[in-house]
Image 1: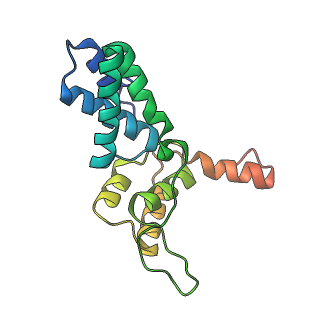
Image 2: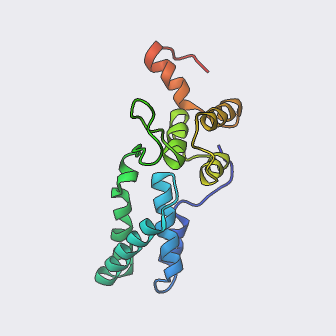
Length: 169
């Protein structure tokens, strides 16, 4: 794990401590919370949609209550509640299956091994379009398995669940 100390929800704290409701602080809070909940950055449309909800809540309820209510809507986003694996892009194989790509594939690989957000190398591979093939998956899985600084609790959990083995690792 990272040993760097990070204040939780810092953009939200910054928003609440500043006078008024600066647009850049509000967007930073929306984007930060969205990524914290979904493990991926929001698209421009997602960011704009939640920004509009937060702004509307603040207009009706005031800054403090409106920000809390508006930002809480992000917790109900489909991607925050469920990890999407819709495979909407790509070519079907002979059986009609479509391989996951980009964020869907990267998050599936990440969640197969651990519970936390993707590391910087995996994020970079996803953003640069290097998570689309079996070879890309193989490269990232081998890298993560070989890296002893990356904790992999789901591997041990697999052996505990399926083989009743608690001394693995």
